[in-house]
Length: 174
Picture: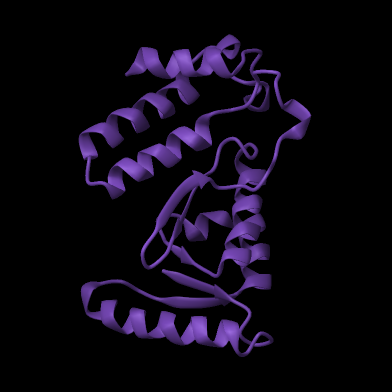
């Protein structure tokens, strides 16, 4: 897991975040969880140029830096409709689209890509310890992304379809 921070400048808030991260990392150190720290400036540069280095890992950050990184991931993977997201708090966990994009330019046109919402639902189902449901939905979404014809995919994926046609392709795979 990698802590994304700006504690070199934001000494109080991010300093506290980093102290808590280090304490949590110490608790997990004996269980095979490696921990590292990265300043947000470098993390953004690394994510945009070499995202594969974060594959399979967990990024831990204050909300602002998570938003920045989520938007970079959205930009390099296909747009805001593709990236799922989760915000984990002490008492509340929120599953939502990962990139903060209001999509006002496509409102009411039926061409919004539902992938991020569907994959966020996959994470919710896993969080609720419902692996049979999460695995089925994930397989259906990924199958539709990989196999559905262009007429079923939304324009941001290079298709000519709409939201409903993509959801139909997912439902057929369920």
